[in-house]
Length: 246
Length: 220
Image (tube, rainbow over the protein chains, first blue to last red):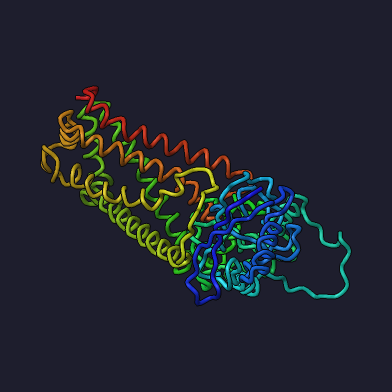
């Protein structure tokens, strides 16, 4: 496959940045999107150019490090798939592909396609935890959990914090991420003591970071590589309003 | 109330107040199909509600105050959230493709602005009678029938466009209010979305029936 890439290049946080066009030849349809970029980067290095910086780690779709907006869609148009698990067979030979970083004020660009997602860490630090006595693991059945709650909590817990929800949201809102973390803990018995204070602390931190508000467009769920459902946001809203009612 | 979630809750509650008003307003409008007298009696009854317990126009004035407060708060929250959203994405995408189905979610702000402008026209037309051929002193039914006279087809057209916009606004807004207040369960989402669509449809048909009937001469 031969492709034309239009890639966002930005040498550092203070650089203005611009789209740069590259030709990539002999791409195998079996390559992942990141492998295709690796091929381009090897050539750029040989030519003495600066390789395109992008985040990645596991390349198995489970770590949440990779992510870029491909042709206007976070992680590309393949549903429920991270960028590293997106394969070139989903693109046409001769296609032009536009690649941009996540765009949000709380996610400043570090370099090229790499953004700083520390804002997510601070939201987690604000309340995304349970205070329980640590020690040896308790027996699995020592605290009963309804099957439905366990399933829903697990669905929410699959969030890998990649930030695609923020990138896709027309408001630059982090509601789906924050809601996934809140829902995951608020459905389980271990999360109950801090349930209400957690929602307030995490939502307030989300606001403080400068993320936008949710208008329930559903763009986040549509691009989420883990398919976190939109009703987690209703769960977050419910917990948050209870916190303010008290 | 200052947080983004607090402002969303304000939008949901004030929106619910306005939707409730719209339902009653629509039912009242349909009185025109029972004759001009029926419509005028209804208009009079609204002003004499609770008399002699309360003075003339007490209930109507309270409703008006609640509505104005709702509109102001709804707009304040919307503008404030839109500004927050603008600040959250200072650099726009070169390419951006929507992945969620339903374009109604993307025209909420534009729709809200259209509806606000329409409400101004609507009040000047049928409440204050400033732009109505019969003026303020005419009976409500006379104002209504004269306002949608076939010769004033463009007025009817304005109403059609505005009411359809209200329908699209509520198609997303009604469901969204439930989601914002956290009253959506995993199984109820579908039902609520269907319900929001149905309510929007009923309101559009109910509100457009009188002006269209008058313009096409069904009601005279």
